[in-house]
Image (tube, rainbow, N blue to C red):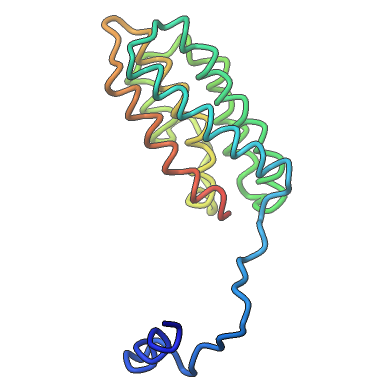
Length: 173
């Protein structure tokens, strides 16, 4: 099978030489430390549990600890991330203010100030920083959505499903 695949890739111009049947498949070395990887795994587990709780209509006070745990995990990743991307320090620290501010924010304001960055400093590395920012901001947004009247569980669920998608990018950074 490997020979067939190698031949097809050579013919298509995707390989310059046949695949070595004895070559090891190596994954790139992880960019996160072991504790960082564990935190990202814990984040994903917690996010999936929050999605399940939101889909069953768990009350605002039942989902609050789960959302706040996600915010805390996201904030806990900042120092290691900033060690690799120093230009993200001010941006991510400013984004972490949402931990204390979310109970007083409405959906429009959290979207403007934190999702669209109106309350965050600009910089050259924002494109690198925003995926980690979203690990902090999306759970806060979900909490705002379930604590508003009327609660919007569908949109809150979407916020957490979206942040799960950001995890793969953050893991690769």
